[in-house]
Length: 146
Image (cartoon, rainbow, N blue to C red; front, side):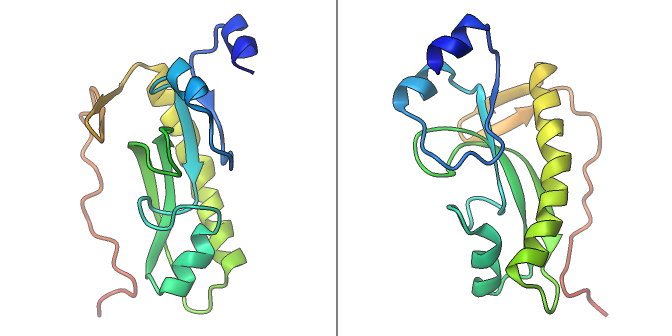
């Protein structure tokens, strides 16, 4: 696989929920150039059951995370996250479906930021260069305050 990627001059490997650990050879060949997406707000609920684990734990806000792949399970630097409220009566499938809608929004966004050369890693933090926008600073409170 590594030879095929190199032969095609691949700049970014986008895994889209790939659920296997990559070998150190692969990770070393594409440092900070492998992205994956996970259906939880990492570092909470790594592994294969993000929405189920969120519901069982009783959190009020779940979501998804795009991150750079490093050795380990779902532990790389976070690029983009989206929050999704956990609603009364949610089961794993309903919550997962709402999270998936956000995954479809933020993964292309993260890839675009990479293509534009705007991502820089400082320690565990991913800095988005040239970001002059004001992020949404209002808190998401679930359930809402009266």
